[in-house]
Length: 239
Image (cartoon, rainbow, N blue to C red):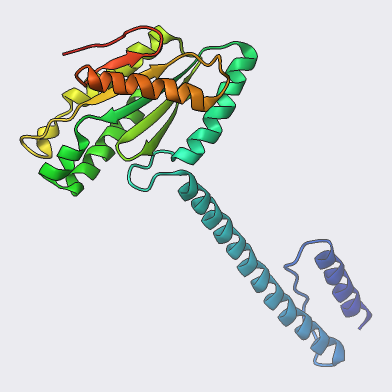
């Protein structure tokens, strides 16, 4: 009996130390044997409950991560959304100001997007936006920040990127979009984008730099679309 009680006591202590899975041999049918059986049964239930709790915690953590990701993503394109972009780009701009590094913002807009929706259907318009998102994601760098800013408009932050380099990147993207085989979606479909670039962050506010990019975007629209314009010098590429 003494040995059986010692085994029970050791098992209880190991459980208290965090080693939950404990079983003791049942060598008799007396009170100690019944106590051992009760201990083993209780331990089985405890381990089962603990494992279920662990599984629930893993599931909850995964769901929380999924909800977090959904809260910062655009549902249609999978790009970041406007709220997330504004927060992250503001921090990136502030860092660039502190270290006196270049920081460029770009606004892009699909040319004649309303006509695409009206002529080919809104479903086709959705596909166009998804394909453009795919092209953009293939062309940008891991350090860049890309988001759908609303409707057919995208926004891109290019840290540590000067004006010349930004112009090269965006013109390459513009050409990729223009030359994409849109006829695979509809034989008469053609898609282009216009872009405005803002390199000046002297005002130290993201909104002001975005306003500069927006002004240049609409200049690109006025001057014929399918081109890139910059806030400090004309960088239009008319076709």
